[in-house]
Length: 221
Image (cartoon, rainbow, N blue to C red; front, top):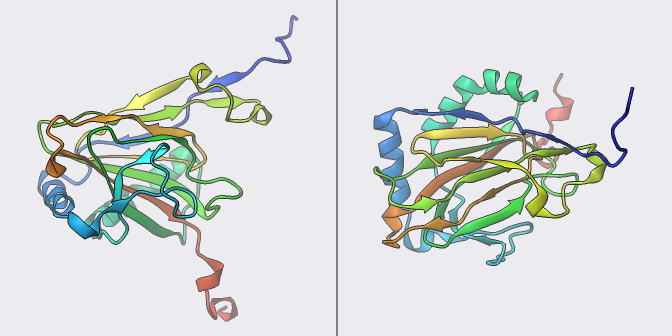
């Protein structure tokens, strides 16, 4: 039996759980209005790594104290099915999330949400999308890059040689995937440049508990 080259690299599609009409029209529209109301000093330039602003790598605005309890409650309702599909356990996790706003020309280049050095507590990524209807912007797709095997070949290299799938940022839709997956936000075109016409997204993670916050929990049977 003839074997393949030892230099062969396998490309496997990354698993993404996508749910449309996630909150329903009434809740989604109310959440969109709250997002649109986040203007002025409540939005800051988005950061990478250790709160570093790098506009050539990521350009958008974010708000870390944005509250979306209805979204968190809905995620809890589907979490068991998501865990089963992605092969991850999220019991006893803590949510961390922020509102992210992309307007004309904004983007986020290929990246991972976690690795052994960066935010290792993140176990599951979720992105929930909001926008006016009809969609007032173009682009802004979530590009998920296929995994390269054997894993020791690494995830860097020539991006033009990678394979991928784009996911539309549809209003009231949510995607779940593993934080180790390589992904990017494609450039957004928003002709009006108006804040209310932006691509709004609530980006977050379910994270394992921070040992520094456990207090006396270790003494509890």
